[in-house]
Image 1 (cartoon, helix red, strand yellow):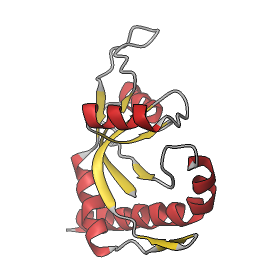
Image 2 (cartoon, helix red, strand yellow):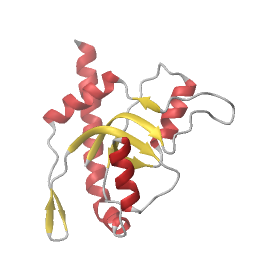
Image 3 (cartoon, helix red, strand yellow):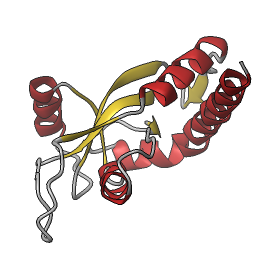
Image 4 (cartoon, one colour):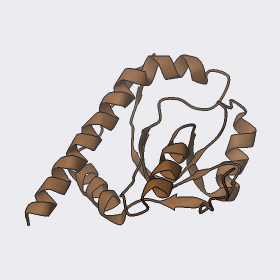
Length: 156
């Protein structure tokens, strides 16, 4: 799965920093960047990935990315949170980057393209290592296609 985030948040959802700066619960993605990524995704099909004895068919997903403080392999917990809070995927880094951008200059555009290489369960670590290169390549391709789309848009 390749997640094109429409917003990024930290879970659990703190709204203030130790310095007292107020943060939104979610950091919204730049509509311009998301639009360019969606346009790029329409012209860039994801390639099937061979994984052990099966063929996986990656897909683009647009949704919320929630960052957490730790890698959590408790599938029932993450699945319930995903359903309850409408979270498309979990990660660890994106909300920290979004928060930094927001506090530095809220006018700076921000978006996350997240390659998901594994499911969250007891076999996730092994699956991650086996699919890392293929999913990273896909993320790089859509990122480059998004940049190209943005350059075409700015010329018009």
